[in-house]
Amino acid sequence: MLGFNEVVMVAVLALVILGPGRMIQTVRSLRRETEDLKRELMKEDGTGGDEEGPGFIYHLEELRRRIIISLLCIIPFTAVAFPFAPKIIQFLRHPYGGNLIFIAPAEAFVVNIKVAIAMGVAWAFPVIAYQMWRFIAPGLYPGERKVFLALFSSSILLFAGGMAFAYFAILPLAFRFLLQFSAPWFQPMLTAGKYFSFVFKLIIAFGLAFQMPIVIFFLVAADLASLETFSSYRRAIWVVSFVVGAVLTPPDVLSQVMMSLPLILLFEASLLVSRAYLKARGRK
Image (cartoon, rainbow, N blue to C red; front, side, top):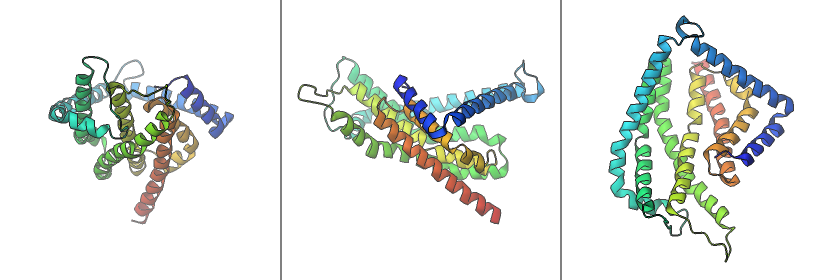
């Protein structure tokens, strides 16, 4: 959760990285962009600012249908994962290494349900990504569709890579750092519910965060945004990365920094790949 400490940290980083003038200018620019987007949505199909256009309503209905399909496809994957929940729990317990306890009669059962749902979401991600493609594809030109299809498999691999990075690199480091504050009179007794909430939030957050190169590359390749625009907002995006790290990760500074730094590195890598693609396209 984003608490007072995280807000203060992000504000200080924004002030240091952007400077007072650039910070105020960035906030004003974001507010203007939000107001312009709102006006454009209200004026779609020439209906004016006081009435939602039929095209906009159609897009919302289509988005709603795709979301419903995505949610429904999670159910069978969850049902398949439920019998394997105890083995999955054993696997996910390794970054901590110790035993977990439960302090409520139904907590163990609820944890098994949560583990099955989490695995159902992870296994259903290709279907969810496909539904996203079906929603976006009708509004794309043929060249843009080819680019998006090429990024489809990369998106799945990056999502899996983000989860693996969180499990094998971030979680052991986070537990070593957090549990070192224990003492003979201050022993950790982690409950299963709290532990898996911490683990799932971190793993899924990293899986989603690793989609940044896909988003940036697609926007640049489809000429929906220029490479110069992203470069000019580099410092602002660094600040946003720390905001995302504060929102998506559990409330400890190490997890937030370990989320923010990969986001910054992914952003810089996205710019390099996008620049190479534009040069190759220009030569062609």
